[in-house]
Amino acid sequence: MQPDEGYEIKLPQFEGPFDLLLFFIERDELNIHDIPIAKITTDFLDYIQQMQALNMELASEFIVVAATLMRIKAKMLLPRPELDEAGNEIDPKEDLVQKLVLYKQYKLAAAELEVFAEERAKRFRRGNLAADLQLATEQADMGDELATLDLYRLMVMYEKLMYSYGNRSREVRHTVEKYPYTIEQQKKAIASLLEINQQLDFSLVVKNSANKVHFVYNFLAILEMLQQQLLELQVGLGFNNFRVSAKEKQAP
Image (cartoon, rainbow, N blue to C red; front, side, top):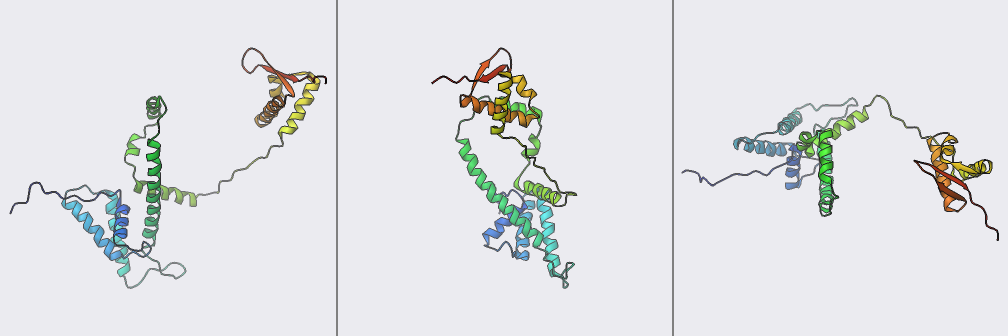
């Protein structure tokens, strides 16, 4: 009997081997922290055999995880369990379980981000977006790498970064420097300068500032004094050309 020419076999698509393992765990309502390794290995290998029978390309990640499952299964069949330095029995499934838990967290986070992406897609984009994207593409050629990025590779990259962070040679420390300036203090200093010079131009503000932070406090102090109507502002020609002077008090 000849098979029907229109008959097709389709397998569900998974983003990676961990996605397939989570499918088996959720389908059979298994405990992710206590995986029946023999059953899940059989299901995993059966899926790979179906892919091979249909001449589907096998990704290297599926082959690596299949080898890992078989290695774990072989270790669990050994009569002598592997012990750590403290003499405690090492669970050969522990590393795989940790990776599955981490992958599941990423998958749930990705689903939440997808909802945000759908909401964002409903909004109007600002103009000239195509020109900005073209400019970004010319400056950083990341298209091919991003096109092949999936959740499994993202998890592997995250794991490598966390390993590098945990095993870094020295701890990174940041020093927070507290500057001895306040706006009220600089208002008094500016008032004193105006008593001497009567007028205070922008270049003099820069000259009397010890550093950039000091200048920012001086500038904020001038703005607050202008708002409180303690100063008068005179704008001249050119860039950053202005002068301030003390506002004369009106007689009652």
